[in-house]
Length: 486
Image (cartoon, rainbow, N blue to C red; front, side, top):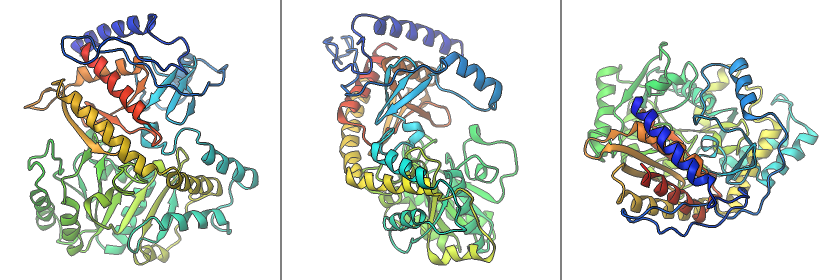
């Protein structure tokens, strides 16, 4: 910790000196030029990058200042809440891929409200749908008819392969995974669930069991849940050998259960775990094993869905499989509290034996907003855009990796990217202190990224899907500049 504090103090002092000088734009919401200092070679100083142009001026902010908000938050909100940065940002406005603080300074949002803002902050078409519906009817529940929930369900079902045609609406990804696990247990008649190590599937008392990162787990009973070896090509004991990882699943079923299981759940690219893409071919092998044991296969698309991976609309399609249940949230609502579970008519029928009800799930406002999100993603061809910009971003990051030993791995696809920082490439030792320093320096330069992985040493680059190649270049140049100062 002493080293971390020393590095952080030194780095922040340098960043403030640079950014406070004449090379930084005096109109932060419109700054667009780049420094002329030559970039990149190890014996030259990396250029100080400035934000790409953006034709938008934030509204004057006259509300409470950050210090006041922070004190109120500490007094009245739960102590488990955490915040980014030594001095927390008071974010007061957002527009597309950018955020603005209380002083009107613009930041590139490369984390999208934790992979939640899909179309862009305050996208006009999504906003309009929400506001128009709010003027007519905000809430009535499914005990009455309303076209918004039916229209949204129809549109969502049309995006699904196979017989995944029945939709249940909820309010979050955690809720979606809770409901999926309930369905799996009822349908199979078994209790045992299988999840991956390094997974994150929620923080409720049940989904905490599916989650397999100790930083997110409380010491409570987690139920009949088995965590199998993670098919991680970078850290995994079998590299990219999907067959060896799949054998571990079979071993768990053979030696840790009655031989029958309720289901298997996984993300295709682990989000909180640090943008870890599963070994190619893994899901196809495991789905076959699980189904032979009487279980159902659940794809957690909370972060990877809706075209973010670029190559496919759904993450599970990258593995060539069709799940029995798909859960989704975050990007489905562009910031609305909205989630969904999509399954087959056969599996859905098990819930009909009792009353299953969700007060807010699929309310008119969220349904109208969710339908608008689907339309915007199609209209603006965001999946193709993610593939194009993501390929450019990954290429530039891999070039950077060749120049900085601290970058152990660059991974992901589309606009779901991870950069793992290490102090030793051979041992893959987490660069915890250096990650903290770089995290703060990126913020000073105007780039907001996420952090993930058990040790918090993976930068998560998962911006709104309107993120451009110019934004990608700015992000990489900022990272280059920051690393050159370590």
